[in-house]
Length: 272
Image (cartoon, rainbow, N blue to C red):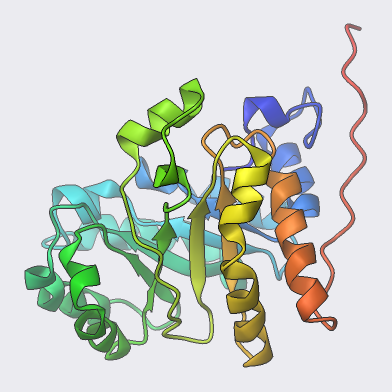
């Protein structure tokens, strides 16, 4: 996500093409969740423009299409998978991981199917898995061992801050009904852990909620890992600024952490 309407004229130029918005976004943050790929496989030409608008070390975590993960449930999806892998190939190292988000109906009993699917994938990509059935969290070591067999990461989606108190805005009420109630899980399985954190539209609550993650991410960095932390709020209006604030809090604990790029200046909106 790099072209939210509320960001235009603030974090992103307006008017601007999608490619120009991605370039501007990449000056604020060094990674992005590729959520649009869940709904449709992009053309190879479109993906090529993504590569052209971002530096080589920019990270894109691309979600596998729902046709593969939710409709076919990882079975008989070879044509769709080939098309997707061909489309994203131009990203090269920017494709930091391919993200296998599974539906809430996918249970630990299906873990063997997932492992077989991951084993069938080319080793030219890294893979990260997000599960939403509560039984995975009741006995996490079993699933961690299964993913460890294939070198895949388990992506935690920390929604504890979102559900710590009743919603207080329309966006929060929408998130309250749509987002999964996930526990906080902070174990890294690989050298490239990925975290998804959902805060609140209230900045203070969002910052308070991410405090357990600051020392954890700093610890991963000191261990030589290279984590990717995605920060969301229900309306996402201030997400780029908040992401940079989170980075600053981690950098205070890891002084050698590479700084974020300097954001591109955005001209103020005009009528003419």
